[in-house]
Image 1 (cartoon, one colour):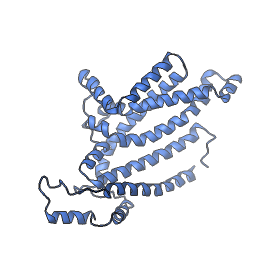
Image 2: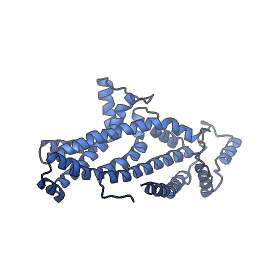
Image 3: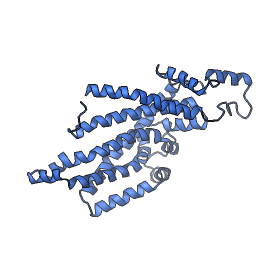
Image 4: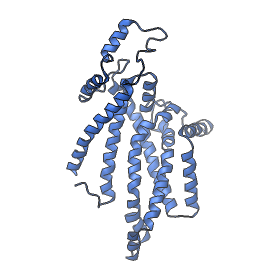
Length: 307
């Protein structure tokens, strides 16, 4: 197991370098003037433009700029943004808020999504199955910004249960945004769990287990559900990384000062260093979650070995 983890961590290095190169190329090779609008409505003084260009190596070819960036990255430095602040510090301040938001969304997916999928799968063709199918299709068809605005209106303004905005980022303030963020994924998890459970309930090994006298509860808990959860775990693991980066809309709706809002503001201000730094961090989180999912495979299905 230890060898497998070390090998996977080493495999992350070329993936991380390749992804950062593509991100850097997309941000800095595209046409645009990073100095534009930096001095308000007036044009920036030539001395300021010259120093800005020199500090960020903007007069060098993009490959040379990338070389400077990688040199800092291997030392754990994500660079200094166009406003003179450390990108690593900016991300470290906002990361706990977005992490809490993603954790709430993931727990919502696991508890409600898997629970609804099992409930529907065990009652295939009956009214619970119909309710889960229609409900999940309804949630999937509604855009996330509409769900967020409705939740804000109903639970924040009309009923007054949750705060409308989440400026300080406490667990209570992030509860409603987290549920909104995970709502679409809950529908996918429910449908995925339901489909795999129904398929495995008809499998030969389940019939054999029942024929040997294994009770219904144990046959489902020990065999059917564990095998059905493998693709669900894969989806949830990949979704965690997506939630960290895809929280832009939810964070904007609820005024959350997290990674999503930081990326949105950096893009609107053409702050390329901040954009690259934030995306590099998200890629790293995504790779770690994929490693964790692969390790969980062995726990769910002993036939899958990492040796």
